Length: 419
Ligand code: EPZ
Image (cartoon, rainbow, N blue to C red; front, side, top):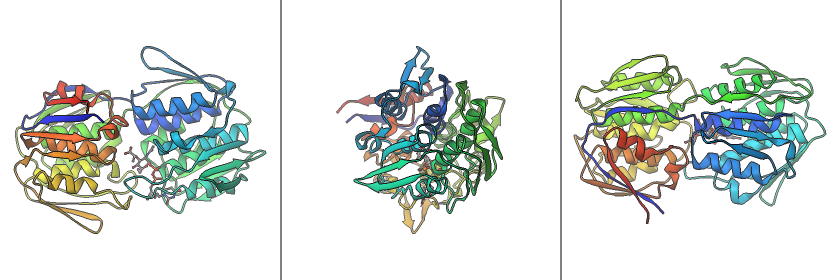
């Protein structure tokens, strides 16, 4: 397994481009299964999770054509199999997103249960309950969700918990169901909104975009279209924290400040001087060490759980005492013990990580456990004296396109070492 070797202590300076959003492109690629004619998706980030999704669709017989800019043309008319096998689903939980589209368009789906992951049990009970409310016959056996439906019908679904992919699966299923579906307590993440906009471009009838109540009038069919995926707000936030944690000055292009208001507010509270434009964000610490902040994660538009680990790293070297409270997942603090090995004065009590910031961490050999924890350890390494070796970085390659190239462009000393 590859490692990343980081020599810390350099304030990051410079400009980089932000890639398309991982958590938008994954549902949109699955949503392409709903269209009667080819779909072309652009601004696709080059990530392992995208490759896995393309492999999954390819194995079903879906025809995929990729051009040199990584625009992907998807034609699902050649589909032969409606199965998402365990060996793919276990590497990427978001494979569950083919369930709704397969059921809605083809009336059958055989999708492996994703199982848990490092950050939590990650159940999919609300996906299943919602599809059953829409008339799907679903049996869970041998580790697979075996689903069928002559034709789904509309239903009024009140989500017990705000779930991003749960909302996305039911939304996609509803676009071809017979009648009206209302999804209440729907997730409002920008990636859900991007999926809604994509589905509307294919001819879906959806109202309530951006709100917690989505009203979908089912159609007989959806047509192919061309769609550009929105920028990745979590990649954006991660590089902004890279600038803040090293007391640097960075400019991020091809992004959208409106996607991460809550993160920008916390960075300003930490002392960052932030300016924004149509498609860029600039952060300047003026060489100052950040101030510690208090953060509490919750569904959008509140502070995103996917930025929690990055702020735990920021607090570790910030001035003063800070806290990070995780309310979405039950086990998303594994990066803390790794940071403690770098000298961080942080302790977890219940759902909160309490930090007493110190001026510099000390480089160490650390291990990544999940995507955002990996990112937080790289950030800690950028702010540490000496060398940090981050192991198991296959996690990072799932969600950050060309991370070492982008960080090197900002002046970081980082290289990848195959094991
Ligand atoms: C999406 O995961 C994202 N992944 C996650 O990003 C993100 O952390 C998460 O939303 C929260 O924002 C993708 O979009 C591909 P949830 P998802 O369903 O949809 C409970 C990253 O780092 N729940 O919104 O799987 C669940 O246990 C990844 O990019 C149920 O109880 O998360 C959790 O406590 C990590 N039953 C809460 O809802 C269900 O059927 C929110 O989970 C579904 C979810």
